Amino acid sequence: MKKLFLLLVVAFLAANVQAQDVFEEDESKTPEERAKTQTTRLDEKLDLSADQEVKIEAINLNTVKEMDIIRADAKTQKEAGNFNAQVYRQKRREIQKERVNEIRAELDDTQKEKFNEILSESRDNRQEKRKNR
Image (tube, rainbow, N blue to C red):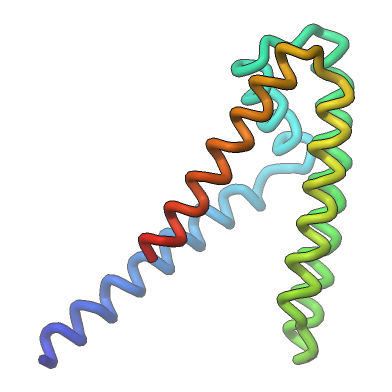
C-alpha cells in the first residue's frame, strides 16, 4: 500500500512539473510571438489570404493581451485570497467567444465551415481529456 501511494505521489509530481514547464514555455514568448503562432496554425488549416492573415493576427494579438491581463488579475487575486474561479472562467470564455466571432467575420464560407470543424474537434478533444482524468 505504501508503494502504491508513493508511486501515485511521484506520478502526480511528474505530471505537475511537466504541466508547469509547458505553461512557462508559453509564457516566455512575447504576446506577438504567441499571436503569430496562433495565426500560423490557422493559416495552415484554412489557407488564409495575406489580408486575412494580417487581420487575424491582429485579432489574436488583442486576445493574447486581454488574456494576459486577466491572468495577471487572477494571480493577484489568488495572492490576496479572493480569487473566484467561476468569474475567471467566464471572462476567458467571453474573450474567446469574441475572438471566434471576429475571426469568423474575416473568413469566406468555405473557411468558416472548416473553422467550425476545427472548433468542434478542439471541443471534442477537451471533453475527452476531461473524461480521462
